Length: 257
Image (cartoon, rainbow, N blue to C red; front, side):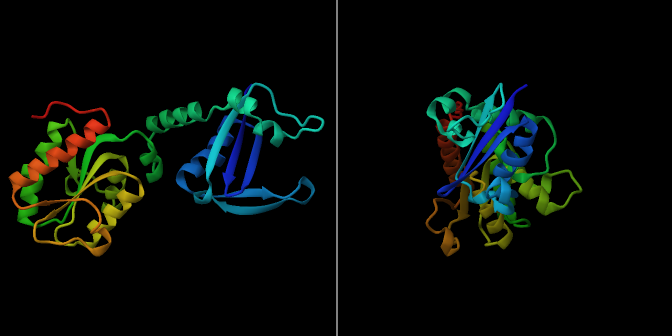
């Protein structure tokens, strides 16, 4: 039987879990850490412990250890002291393997958590955020964005193409979370497009911001790099160049000339 232990650090403080099952460490700590959830902590001595709520968004790091035997308090040495020793950490740290297993398990079953989806390896998709009902933008989507994505062996989708009867806003956020790249065209200054681009940014997604020449992004995005395009040929050239750079940086470039 294996025993799992964890060390959670937040600021100058820390918390210890010892002698737990893999399932408990996963459900009680690792997934809440990934999702930024609130958990309960037992704070204080064993004789005077109090349960407090802790927001995992405030955690600095989480490290997981695995031993074949349960940790026990030894004379003059607490479990906490044992776990802080470099030799113990080097021998028993299983954080990397633990996370790989969670990714594999999460990818094998449906999940409703957007942050869990973002944590998984992204799908080879380009999800497009843009204003609907605009002839120029619709043409750019069909004639520029979709064929450029195809050159890089990426599927391309916009929310109006999703054959699903679910709630549109949920579908958009789900596609953003699981896609490799996001193309956000902010022409027309639609509030929902800014919201969706902000959500993608918060998840740390690779975002390509675009806008038609002659229009301006809102002031809080003016410092970001935009593709400003006049014609579809101009748009195609710039988008191809940007995607090629991103793919090369990830080591997945292909011949697209």
